[in-house]
Image (cartoon, rainbow, N blue to C red; front, side):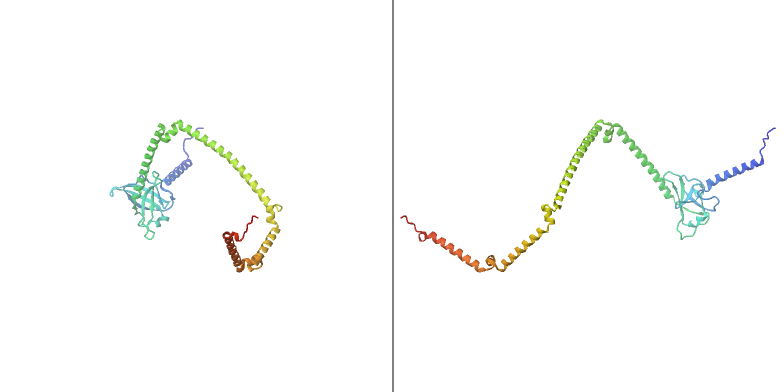
Length: 308
């Protein structure tokens, strides 16, 4: 049976629906941005001297949240500028005031471009649909300038790093000699060996120190045991109350004697407290001294010598 090459109408309808859906999704991906294509949007116009690589479809952010996208970019010959038409979702349009401003920014220094919208003073009236928003090109120029400066710094740093590596390869400088001179490696190796020997000696001395410390602790333990032994001298002094009683009795008796001496009782008390005893003793010493002097002057008066 001969096969028909004619396309059925049902198959053609399916193909048309698929193509339409694909085209619709493609259109939505370029025009919807971070918002729904079924969501209503209002438009605004902004004029730039330089859009810095901004393209149609680039997102529009308000305080870090995507609220719309760039609809079109074209030359405004009458103003010798570039006209940018942006679209913002209606549910945030009331935030955009008449003093709003917008700038071209980028993700990083050389990333994708987007529009950063500053809504303006909340107390002012809302911007009308298709109204003009003031361009803020100073920040965009500053960002691009910073990006160029950063690239220049990176380039300079790369050149300096390359020169440094070249000097190292030639063996110049301390680092270069460290990489190319074997003597530095040998000296370093010898220093490490000496350090290891020193550490070994320290470990040995440390063991000795710990042994001595343990012996000292053992001796202190023996001394403590001797102190706490009630049969020893120190232990009896600590635990036997008889020594304290004897010392208390001796102290009491000595105090009684001192009290009697202080009151003039007894020989020692009279000697300490009676002034007449001192005077009599003084007179006795004076008379004794006079007697000795007289004996020196007149020995014959006291001593008689006879041979026969």
